[in-house]
Image 1 (cartoon, one colour):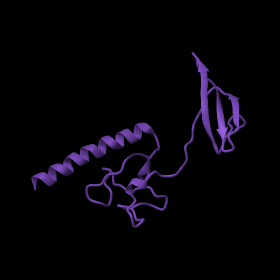
Image 2 (tube, one colour):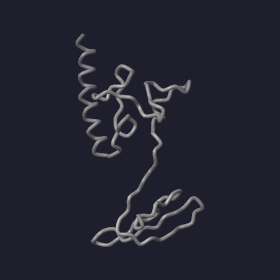
Image 3 (cartoon, helix red, strand yellow):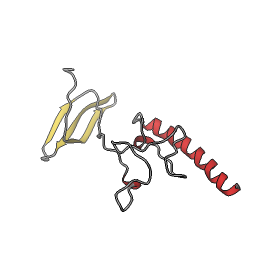
Image 4 (spheres, helix red, strand yellow):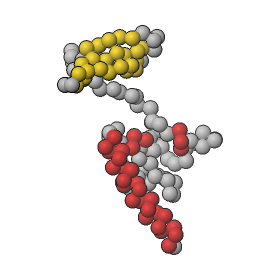
Length: 123
């Protein structure tokens, strides 16, 4: 819309405001130029790249199955295709990309890990 400006290739340098909230921000572009913008709010978009490097093996293959975007394929219990490996948050398929959802994923995975380890120790 006319009230929203998408600013690419830039990072927030300073977000400032008063007791009522955000009143503006300074952004720095890739050339190092700083721009001051008066705004009533800020939404920061960090990109679509999946941070999955921790799952990369030396041969360049992943430890578990991923989709074309590099998102880890999990079931409803956050289990991957590799026994004992769980994936949560933004790196998994169908993630809503929200912190609160990632925390919920972590809780689900933690409970599943406890069950998995318990089965290993008691079999």
